[in-house]
Image (cartoon, rainbow, N blue to C red; front, side):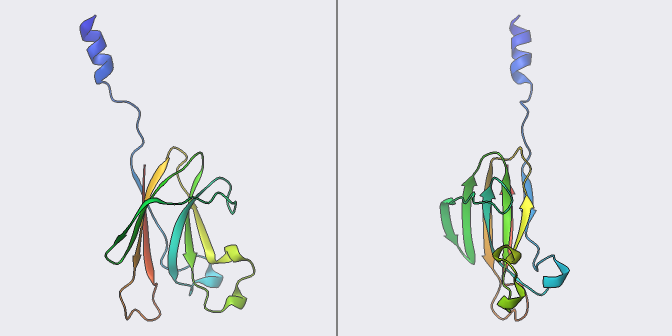
Length: 132
């Protein structure tokens, strides 16, 4: 009986592997493909909803910011882009690109890095979300 209990305890529990999400350097919509990436945030709930999350344990690091997010049922990585001609935007969400996170995930570490100075015409940031 003791060996059976040991085997049951030694079996791995169902876990979610860490996943990596990255924002595209330029807005993926062909009509806005010249809009560079400027930042990102993690949201929860419905797409384009109001499930704002505040990153806890945000830390300034060389070249950017690391923020930790915990969230509920449905998480999103929201990539934010700079539209040089504001008239190009029909709605505020046009400057965003929403990437749905795996529903099994419940936390992310968001790494936002500034591009190196002198990258004229190139994306001004890089964004990586490490989620589990």
